[in-house]
Image (cartoon, rainbow, N blue to C red):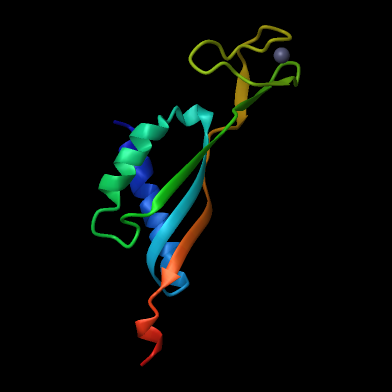
Length: 122
Ligand SMILES: [Zn+2]
């Protein structure tokens, strides 16, 4: 399951962001994942549940949005959406000399957290 390291990374980044805001519990995490990562959302949700065990992210809702991949042809400069797993060849000049310019990232777009109200009373 290659989603596990991604889930661990998401948990670490979310917890770090929440700690910076003095939060004690994370309610929701929104993440944008490039299609190049070939992440299966259901598998990532399961991995997230396991990875968040024992952290303040446990029980948080994980909202996953997938971002289209974009490739750029090094030969003719054409930009296109590559068919992941099928072909990375440029649709205009048929060269396979392309680079991926989008769709390879995992971005935390939002972390919703809750501060511990009792802690602020003292
Ligand atoms: Zn081309």
